[in-house]
Image (cartoon, rainbow, N blue to C red; front, side, top):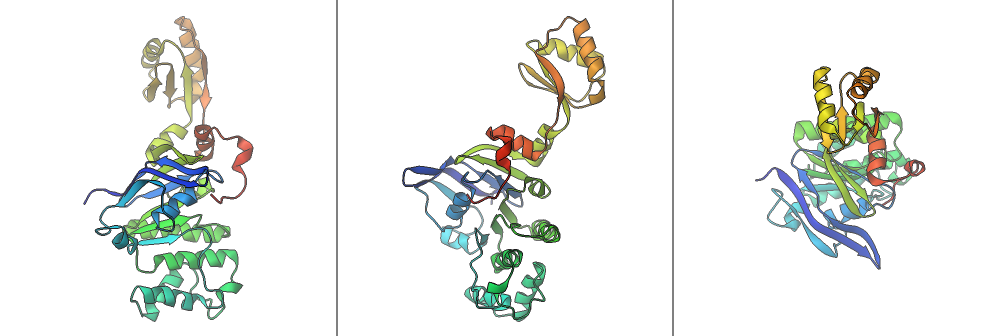
Length: 311
């Protein structure tokens, strides 16, 4: 069994003449929490629908490793909450879970109650699901996805409609499932700050294309405060950095250097570079969070980052 639990190759989906997902290659490691990032209409939900068997791709393939001999077997080990939860509005939370549990051959009231308590719905009684708030419906949808104790979870905007306390509870629940039970999670969210608190890996989607796959450590490195130097003579600048005792820096490309330590000494560094007669295109402090990095990577305008997600 490899460390890769899911691998897609050239995954493509068209709706008429519109290409919703365009030859996407994703690789997800077992035990990871993979955050799928993209603006409204980027293709995230369509990817999840293909991976869960809800729709078929027009082209490309995907395979799960270690979840069965074929996709039919693998789907039994996968839990999914995609778009609005599929609920019976006239039934209680308990009865909704009973129906799903019955399909898995589970007939244990204690098991169902444990799932409800896990998502904060342990005391809703016989209230019909149709009377639930949006946040309560999301919680019930997550509980339904957990029936059968899946090895892999597909969660599309699972914190949509939750209040701040509910968001924290769902976050802690997902971390517990991941760390204590080894559940691999593919999760999308437009609340990037919240996603950054749990994701170990990221896939950035724009206009149906996978722009970048990046680990949490790589992202943190790129989002750290740093002195960004642009010059045609990186070798000479490196000599200055070494002479001035700068230890934490990297030559990103032939014209770019990032310096991560002693940010406050930028004026001194600039002066030493000037003394050496080295020409710079630019020097300045660069900092960004996950949201800013996403916007830079996709070339998205800042104004577009506001609003909901329904891709």
